[in-house]
Image (cartoon, rainbow, N blue to C red):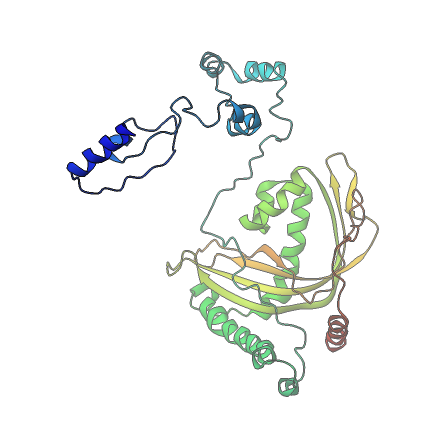
Length: 359
């Protein structure tokens, strides 16, 4: 008691300003050593510098192990040796290690083609007007928006307008085409160019093919000829060629290098067959006569004196009913399990369109 009294008397006699100090049992192995001096915080247990020692060491060791990531560092000596090896020796070394570099990678096939400005590598206007868009009174029917009702007629009017302004009129600006008439040309030369283009493919003569086929069409047709063969026999036309659209544009734009394209509707009878490199039939038949209705695009580099009409491309409009040939190798495609079924309304609309178009 005497000691307690003496300490109290000393504190009373030596009056000091009151100060609040924080007391917290914080301990961590990364804490600084002068916390008590500046913050008044003192470690509760100096012996335990890490919380995960003793008790928690065994409990959380699996979680601590998951935090680490094992890195496969490259062997610099081995990499340096591989850089100096030829490709054949490097592949042999990979196979020894159980690595097959060509397992999921096929050999690279070069499909690059030379670009020229004598041809468009696309169709200028792929729009094909429908056979009959329907009576004009359909515009006033209820149930459709005004935009949907007027779209077929606006597109038809736009196509007719562009046939004159960006088509025939633009072609006739050149001296060699002052009296050009698309209908006369279609009736005289179109079928001959079409027939000769396919016959030249059967000969595999590249120079002969390029006389009747543009560079754009050549890069599409040549792989079938190079890796296989084509049999073609033209038996005549079932209807005269019909001009669908006439377009003329510059390549590049506003350069004066004009190129003309004419889209024709051709109805022909023909025999066609495609074979692979071993002579096995892939598509078509040598004996079966097929009636074909297709929209073929012909192109001419009219800015050049040596330009000539050639086969350029084909258009498949959404309303075309051409039956696709079934491959003799793969057979018909199986319907997908999760494919959505067509609704009743869409089936009824397709039937009405077929009746209007006369199919």
